[in-house]
Image (cartoon, rainbow, N blue to C red):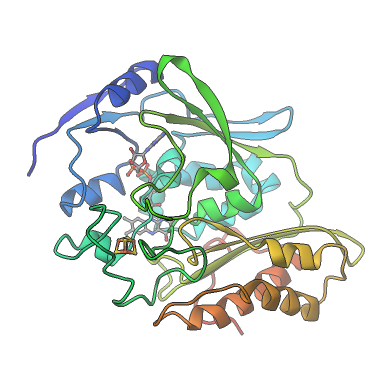
Length: 342
Ligand SMILES: Cc1cc2nc3c(=O)[nH]c(=O)nc-3n(C[C@H](O)[C@H](O)[C@H](O)COP(=O)(O)OP(=O)(O)OC[C@H]3O[C@@H](n4cnc5c(N)ncnc54)[C@H](O)[C@@H]3O)c2cc1C
Ligand code: SF4
C-alpha cells in the first residue's frame, strides 16, 4: 500500500484550499471510483480530502427548477420526490447504474467526475495515454468492442461510463463549481465533459481544485414523456454498451421539443443533435424515430470490434423514444432493459 494523507473537511473553503495547494490531493466522495483506482495501482493521490461531511446534500426547488447538492448520494437523489415527479428521466438513469450498494455510497459530484476509462486504463502493464500521457492507446488497435463510435481521437477511444450524466445532458443541467479564493462559476452540461483530442488525460473542464457544489435542473415539459434505456451485457454491475436518454414534449402527436443523449458511445455524453433537429415539428411516429436515428448514426465512426454499436444505437434511439411516448417506466430497476432492443 502507498501512504497517503487523509482528512475530513468541515467547510468547502478548507477542502478547496487543500486540493488547490497540492497537485497530489483529491476530493474524496463515496470513494467508489477513486479508491477502486488506488487499489488497482492506477492512481496514487498523496492526500484525500473527505468532502462527505460538507453541507451540500440538499435537493430543493428553486425559482427555475430544482437544485441537487453534490454530496447527496445517488440513491437519495434518484428516490427524491422532487426528482421522481419532475425529472423521472434522471431517476431512471441513476437507478440503471451500478448496484444499490454503490448508489448508496456514490455522491452526485463523484458520479460526474468518475474517470472516463477502459480496461486498458486499469491494466498498468498496458500503454494508455489517459493514465500515462504519451504512452500510446492500447485499445485503438486492441480489443475495442466497448469503445467509442463518436468523437474519439487516435489518442483515446474510451467511453464515459456515467448513466446519470446522460440524463443530465438531455435535461441541459448546469454545474455550479467553486475554486480557490471563493471563485464561483457555472458550467453548461454540454461543456462539462470533453472529447479526448490530444489531451485524453483530462476528462472534464474543471480547473485544479475546483469543487462541484450543486447541479441545477432547469424546468422543462418532459416529465410525462421521458425514458432511459440502457443496453448492457448483464443486468447489474455493468456499464452501458449503448444507452439513450430520450425526452419529448408533444402537442397532440406533434413533437414540440425533443432531447436525446447517448451513453456508451463517446468520451462524454453524446447529444444526438442531428436526430433532435430531424424530429422537431414532426409527427411522433415509429417511422420518424427510425429515420432520425438513421440520420444521427450516419456520422458514427466505429472501430474494428464495435460496429454492432451502430445498429444497436439506431434501435435503442427508436425504442427509447417509444418508451418516452408511453411515459416511461420507473420504480423498478429504472428504465433499464437487458439484451438487444427489438
Ligand atoms: C462495480 C461498479 C459498477 C459500476 N457501474 C456503474 C454504472 O453502471 N453506471 C454508472 O453510472 N456508474 C457506475 N459505476 C460508477 C459509480 O457510479 C461511480 O463510482 C460513483 O458515482 C462515483 O461517486 P463517488 O462519490 O464514489 O466518487 P469518488 O470515487 O469519491 O470520486 C470520484 C472522483 O470525483 C472527484 N469528486 C468527488 N466529489 C467531487 C466534487 N464535489 N467536486 C469535484 N470533484 C469531486 C474525486 O476527487 C474523484 O476524482 C460503477 C462502479 C463500480 C465500482
Ligand atoms: S482508450 Fe483511452 S483509456 Fe483506453 S487505453 Fe486508450 S487512452 Fe487509455
